[in-house]
Amino acid sequence: MLKKTIGVFDSGMGGLTAVQELERLLPDADIVYFGDTGHIPYGGRSRSQLMYMARRNIAFLEERGAGIILAACGTVTSTVLDTLAAETATPLFGVARPAAVRAAGLTKNGVIGFIATEACIASGYNQRLISELLPGAEIVSSACPDFVPLIESGVCSWDDARLRSAIERYLSGIKAAGADVVVLGCTHYPIIAGAINEYLEGRAELVSSSGEAARALAAAIPGASGSGRREYYTSGDAGVFVSTAEKLLGRAPSGPVVSVEPYDIEGI
Ligand code: DGL
Image (cartoon, rainbow, N blue to C red; front, side):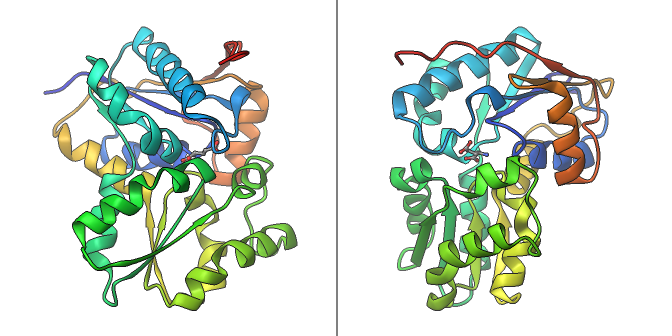
């Protein structure tokens, strides 16, 4: 029986969508979460900053006992995770491959929409993965830089005109191309899946990169157990973290939330 603590990190609230699924699959597992709200958004940052921040986040989780780590961030996964995996003893999981596998298996017409942050789209990482799995697939990708700031400010409903107009702007090409599967390549996006679905009029299957990654991680550690310990850390305000989680996910984080000083990224 595996007793390792699972560490999960993201730039903010998005990784909580992976934690929710991990909790459902592994209710007794010990989970420690770091939301780097002090440096959000990650999606417009340089590769060297992402490398530095991901290294710091991994070390932070290791210091708190993590024996296996999920980078619940599409941006980190697609830009620096392979490099970090080669230098980190702790097993690292990302959110790209499980979603690509699911999307390639689900599509009927071979037209797959892929939405994520600017850095993630620019890396071409996920598009390459899908093409390798399904040669000939038409991948229509779209960077959605306004989504993370909107979601972190608590905007997640189709009724909100700001979100509606962002969705129309970012997904019109995907809708026009007739994609029958859309990958939510940023872990924040499952929070607005209802609104995206509304815009696509239910014509595309949405694949959650965080949900798929959580299931892949759980499958890799069958029988994992612990004492159900949950710890949440944020480099932002702990109270804001709790209230935003309540608003976006309908419930408070499942353990204490501790605020830590954001590390310095000046000059990186
Ligand atoms: N949840 C992160 C991702 O999956 C959001 C990145 C950001 O902060 O822009 O990419």
